[in-house]
Length: 87
Image 1 (cartoon, rainbow, N blue to C red):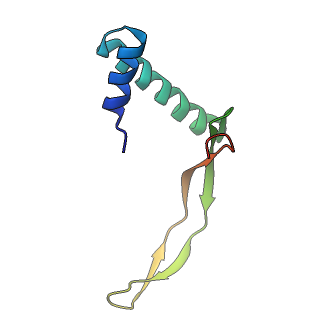
Image 2: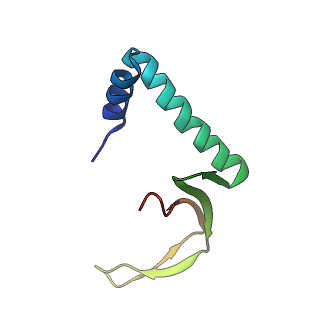
C-alpha cells in the first residue's frame, strides 16, 4: 500500500523541491478532485479514471448476529472507475 506521505517524498525527490511544497501540491490536487466531485457529481481524469457520485436508496437489511431487521438510510457514495489504461 502506498501512502500520501510516500507519494509526497517521491514527488519531492523527483521534482527537486522540499517535502513541504510537495505536500502542498499533493493536498491541493486531492482537494481540487474532491471539490469537483462534490460540485459536479463527476470528474474524469483521462488515462486514469472517473470519480462519480452514486446515490444509494434506503433499504432493509438484517443484523447477522441477532437476525433483527435493520433499516439502512439512503446515502451518497463516491465511486472510482479506473480507465482501461490503468488496468
